[in-house]
Amino acid sequence: MPDHQQRIAYLLARYADKSCSREELDELFATIGQGNDPEGLEQLLEDVWHTAHPAPEIDYEAVYQQIKPAVPVRKTIPFKRIAIAASLLLLAGTAYWLLPHKRTAKQPLVVATPAQQHILPASNKAMLTLADGTTVSLDSTGKQLIQQGNVAIRQQNGQLLYASQPTDGNIHYNKLTTPRGGQFRLVLPDGTKVWLNSASMLRYPTTFSGKERVVELDGQGYFEIAANAQQPFKVKVRDMEVLVLGTDFDIMAYGDENSVNTTLLTGSVLVKEGNTKQLLRPGQQAVVDNQDHQLTVKTADIRKVTAWKNGMFVFNDMALPAILREVARWYDVDIVYTASPGAELYGGGIGRDLQLADVLALLEGNGFNHFRIEGRKVIVLP
Image (tube, rainbow, N blue to C red; front, side):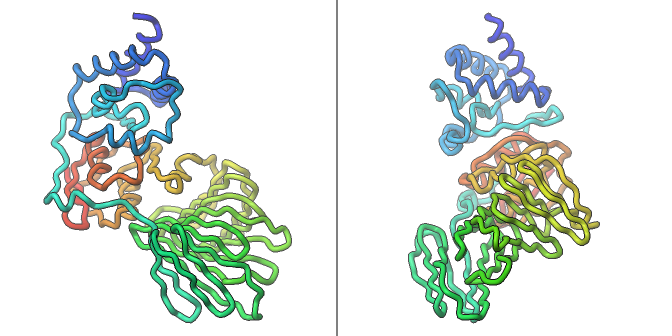
């Protein structure tokens, strides 16, 4: 066997028994992504498949079709047999996991009734509350023109667009709210684009006037700010403020999370919490603890932070409860623990357009806990 195949075989064996390091995992995926020697790789995957314990039965070829755009491959690798091996290894761009412990064989996912298997992912839906209290339901298919005084609001293609209008001297506020199981896009009167994640709310004026453009956020939003040095953009999250001139950034501010995270992709933002101020550079994340309100700055995992906007769940050494909080918001389900979650940390990616049962099966097949779906509840079992 050539040296490069021996190295891949070694890495595959380490991966199969959950003993490889993060560096080894990265090396393995990089090698697969290059697509060199596809026949040799296919045979190695088959060899591992025949010598390892099978994982839960899932249509991983369908999973691959959902997620493959996220992983470029230079050469075509015959996927039919790789998909079989992937039901153990979850390789070649489907979904991949790194656990710190070796696990034993497990029972397949328990689902109470066939109907409950088909809990679908979130879709474009939201509720628009106008300044006078009128509410308008929004979805991905609706096309309508909403007139609010001299302000024209157009809904089309799963987004809401505000046309820039002269002000009448009064400030009118609208509120866009996404439920659990919903998401929506918004173009503000100044041209700023906002992606609103599930269970989120944005409050904003229908016309920006004065020295600042100010909006209020609860939940999670991704912002592409229209540059205007004469009128800085400000996002308020409870007691925290993010001051912007022109930039792309993400704010995650869910009440059930441990912190409010502001992540900068381009430009610059000034994060203020109480008397503490911190200027961020691209690639940095400001973390404000929800308990003691301390502000710290760290290097951001940009791929993970922006994954939701790009249609993915991406986990990087995340514990099960944190993952399930994301799952609960996206699929509009409640999580009920009948057993303590395992201590393993998950790393990898899953398409957010999969059904809930498929996501839980991937988690179950690579962790210590089982799951059962009961109506709109996910029961976490030993």
